[in-house]
Image 1 (cartoon, rainbow, N blue to C red):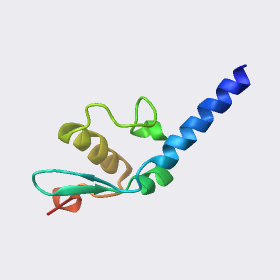
Image 2 (spheres, helix red, strand yellow; image 1 turned 180 degrees about the vertical axis):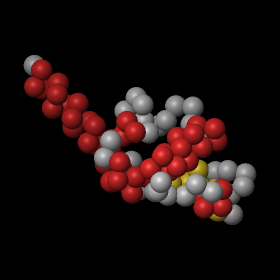
Image 3 (spheres, rainbow, N blue to C red; image 1 turned 45 degrees about the vertical axis):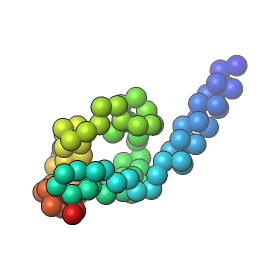
Image 4 (cartoon, rainbow, N blue to C red; image 1 turned 180 degrees about the horizontal axis):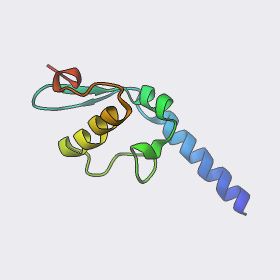
Length: 90
């Protein structure tokens, strides 16, 4: 029974990851942000780096959460954009 549960859970996790959009557009007053989800999936290899509760929509994700999560990660890893205009495009 445990093996069946593990197989189903693994299948669902892979299916959700495969269905995630390649590119996501996040609307913002100072210019929309284009988030390349697939590129981040490939480089991070762990959904929980961004999704605390596993794959799916990030609960409460907005301006403050995006700046803390996204910009914070870019600063920590010293990779990716960190200035406003590098993400926000009008």
